[in-house]
Image 1 (cartoon, one colour):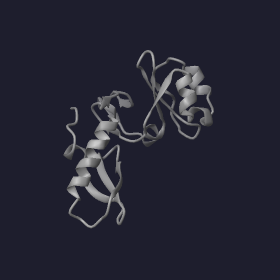
Image 2 (cartoon, helix red, strand yellow):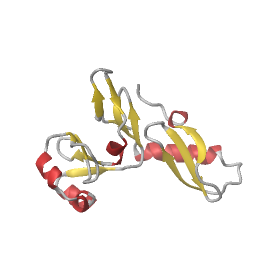
Image 3 (cartoon, helix red, strand yellow):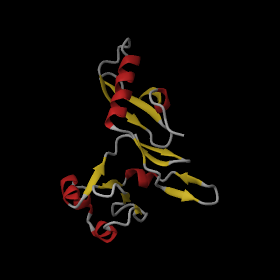
Length: 155
């Protein structure tokens, strides 16, 4: 789990606030410096957040290039998965690791093993509410609890 500590911040409330478009944007980590950048696509109404490295280049990229993972790696940026993005008012953005996602999937499978829902196809995590929805062969959008039910979250 990576606590990115980035996002839209309200100085008056001393807290981050949730912006759906930020959680739908491209999240990048600079390969050399480790700095993060949230880069909007052309339809999203915010400016780059985070690193100022290559800011002009990132702003100038058309969506098709911004969405090309291999090209972004050539330019020195690792693309972070859209799966497992979480929001915290105190920490900003959090990104679950692949291991975290697998832990949740394993626990959800175990939790529902006695049901007749069939095999688990996927889990979807709501970034703002931290709820987990499970998708099985025979039923979709099954309430599987909260991320906190499966992982210890940072405070």
